[in-house]
Image (tube, rainbow, N blue to C red; front, side, top):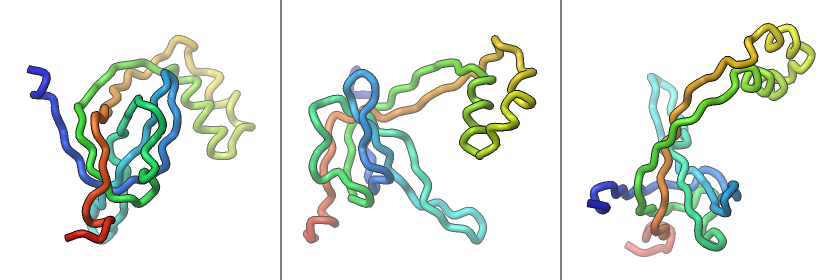
Length: 131
């Protein structure tokens, strides 16, 4: 029954692979989304792979085929830490104590991560000049 959880994605690499704890690598594919008159490229599920180094062909905007399986995991994040991080990223570090300080220390935000764990990654014919 292991082969029931199998997914094949085709898309373009949205960001270069980066190392993650545990020795693997992660990158995202993007897809084009149209919302009313606005069309933009949005990252989709992160792709995780854990063997050796990333393939040499894996670069931003490279068209690839990923074969793997879907993995979900549940986790909690501290809300005060999330707010503090967001304020720093927005350049509003001076407001951290006023906005994040009053939040209860044990307040947690439940999250679900959906990832693709890759078994195989290959380039598509489109980028090799083949038909």
